[in-house]
View 1 (tube, rainbow, N blue to C red):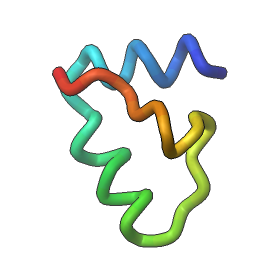
View 2 (view 1 turned 60 degrees about the vertical axis):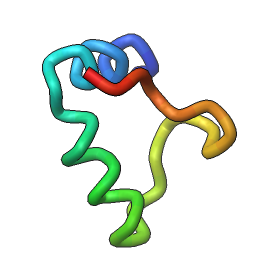
View 3 (view 1 turned 180 degrees about the vertical axis):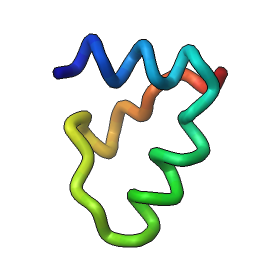
Length: 38
C-alpha cells in the first residue's frame, strides 16, 4: 500500500491526499513523515 501512495504522490496527487488528511481521512503514512511533494 505504501508503494502505491508513493506512486500517487509522484503523479502529483499529493495535494489531493493532503486535502483528505485535512478532511480527517486517515492516511497510510505517519504524520511525521509526509510523502514527497511532486
